[in-house]
Length: 454
Ligand code: GLU
Image 1 (spheres, rainbow, N blue to C red):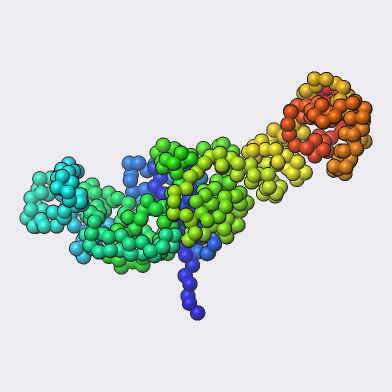
Image 2 (image 1 turned 45 degrees about the vertical axis):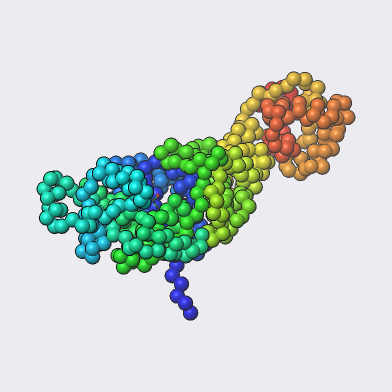
């Protein structure tokens, strides 16, 4: 029997802004992979950039993931782990894979322009590799600190991408990447690999903007003697007009969507089903979504995230949610009118918070709107006896009652129903009156039909 290791995946945002819908995609795809295959989901804050990372954003990441329904099995911050990175750096230096360079940014830029003018590819020429010990010492005596580059093997790196099939990147055309800056701080590339090894990451699921990094990182995995994980690069989300999403611009941040009343499962459904092989539809639970979304069957073209489509999905989702799924939140909204109330109003709301308005309408005093008292007065006189159960207002009973009212008043259709609705709810539109009447109750309904606040 083969020994299948349960997967360990990670989501590794840098806390330099609020998570937006584009970041939610890898977070969710990793989470769904973890739900589908078992294993572990690691949340890792890639916060080696001490200037742009903030505690506020770090906390917001955790909060926003919780809101989405992602509950990591483990949590790390790269800023706690520099000692580990320093050890690996020493190892790479000792093995000749990391070498010191002294060029300033201006020098590099000048060289790059020259190469371009000569029609050469603007890759780093490895000049620093040829420095002798005394030349290096002289540069350091000038006060220069080295930055460190990884010596790439000039070969083609090939991997079998879970999402895109075989990918081959020729590293001959790449510059040796800088892994550590003059001031000793780390760029993203190396700590990510060290952590992936240390945390036993088996699958790296991330956006296709990281494909070139992957070739470099596979070489670093190998240089450090680590197990190379399976990679899956998913397509990216763009705005409806096709622009890329940016964390710094606060594009469609998860908290904006939350504040706009979007349901987490509507966001999760759209963020993962758009640009997949599956139809975009509202899915009620993560477990169910995990069975539908298959990272191996995502489209390779960019996927458009449309806020209007999200709003529609949100409405469709709410209209189908069972009472149990929303009960706690209705209580928190002070709108828990029980199952009958929820079933009566869910088809008429576009955000869960709208349920509060309907609960107010059925359970708190309201000034009725009466343009012409003819129909409301007739209705008040013909109300069935209480107490009102659902049977009293069954569809059949409702039909009999309204037919009697029509006969009495000579009104029908809109001319009959509009004044009834305005008197009973104060609104032109809303849920079926037959469903609202048992919730409003006989006394209150009668008073409203008679034009009294009740
Ligand atoms: N911090 C990187 C990012 O947000 C992580 C990329 C990765 O998953 O390796 O793009």
